[in-house]
Amino acid sequence: MPLDETTVRNIAFLARLKVPDEELERLAGELSNIIGWVEQLAEVDTEGVEPMTSVVEMTMPKRTDEVTDGDYAERVLANAPEPASGYFAVPKVVE
Image 1 (cartoon, helix red, strand yellow):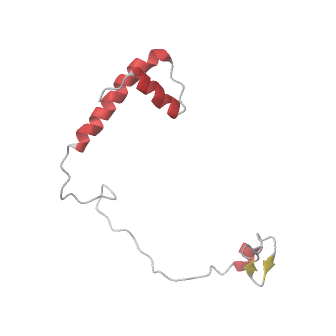
Image 2 (cartoon, rainbow, N blue to C red):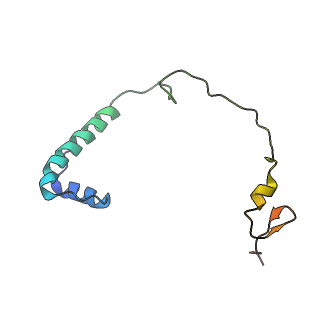
Image 3 (cartoon, rainbow, N blue to C red):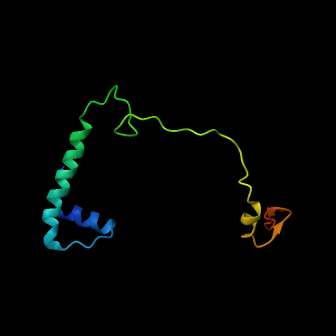
């Protein structure tokens, strides 16, 4: 899909890039090559290929899922403008 200079100018505008007019033709060619490469990738048959999370085989480390309060409520509530009974006090928003 070849791009023309008007399209490249519009892409540059949308990307908030200042591209000089003498660069538009070269940039159109480069962008057309990139889009062609992406279209070529779409032709690759990926049926039956498992998705990868890494290029090396590994198992993600897991930790036990246990609830803790962190045991530092006083430090957290020190940031509250008006703490009340160990909680953040907020203005009433529902009538």
